[in-house]
Image 1 (cartoon, rainbow, N blue to C red):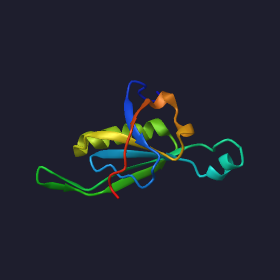
Image 2: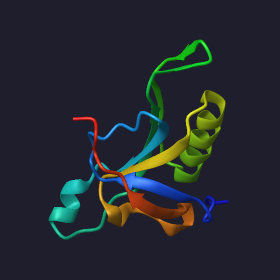
Image 3: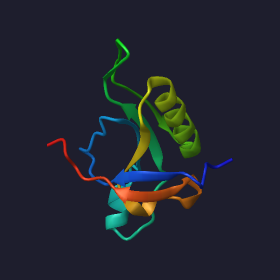
Length: 116
């Protein structure tokens, strides 16, 4: 199973964006320079991270997991973490929108940076 194509994700391409109310899946590739040269991207990888928060008197420490080379597994981990930790949603940071694969879901509204 590649992912849930019925999910819609808020997203940004701002690497400095940190969603304080969500678990984030950051999708990137180490071969950004290849695109500049007109070549194809390498295989994407994902990092899952979340901010510190206090929920019902307990502190959930900020953390991360990955990198994942299996992007659907990264989304499954992110959704399980969001549910367990009480975060409201899973959001996406894309190094470049060309990395998105519709099999992972749909890109919804673009997040506006508010943390600067």
